Image 1 (cartoon, rainbow over the protein chains, first blue to last red):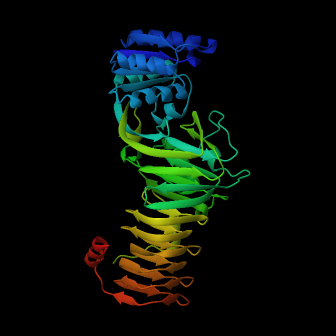
Image 2: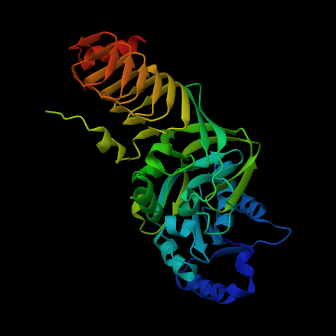
Length: 276
Length: 131
């Protein structure tokens, strides 16, 4: 049985036609199930908890990346065996990462039920599938906060960060930017490879570790630091800083404890080569 | 015969199995890796890799270092162990002992210490196990 969660963005007037088409396609493909809507009094977290209490096996999020992130947070926190599906209303990080077309076309993917299991990143009380990024003086503004903007040096001001891996080593870096990658889309991977000689492996989503890239001042290869870790403690020496999880969730803190949760999310995906 | 990668070759390739420590970075503690490691910053402690280790010109390493092939162009204070080959570039300054099967020292390289040749990878693994 499918449990649909329509977020508040999906209920905006501009998406009414798209919602009509989604409704028709659900019927056509016999993907019917319970449909719920996010409201002021019933947010995504509450709806997710309700679904989990009903022991549903498939939750489908209709809306934006931040809503999908909120739902996966609920699923992973309760350690439920649920497959997560996504109907993005517009192109986004998750739609690209999982190769899911937008709006009613996403239902074709859901009907094929290609399910992958992927590692998940946990940072403090938040989660990320793709990456956690910090960039000085850059704020989240939709797709502007991507890898390209992350590595573009405008007026970089370095902040001293500690990256601590257990008691093994402590890495002190004057960093203008850093990224902790779990898995990236093929487009983002290509960009990383071309501009910075950094390439994540094809099995990055299931290798149980992060790739960490730290950039200081310039973006020359000598200023780049890259290493791998399964968990990490990151501390800013300049007070709280804002990191962005999966380009859709802000997290402000001075200290970040980051872990890999191996193979902890089941996701319905398109024919994504990343997950073969 | 195995040919160690040159410094230039190693700097232009980075895969997800490669670790790079940048110029403005200080690393303290015991660093272990399965892939290739390039150090351009400051390191104190130990560095152990099953892959190749490159110490760049800007690197200041106060650590015992182990690698399959070790190429040094910067400063190293500590013992160097290699399973295959150690290459000392003209710009390097090494104060410590070297254990390796093969060594190449460029004209101008500074090396203050003893060099023990002919140790096998088995003996290196035994040493590591005892540590």
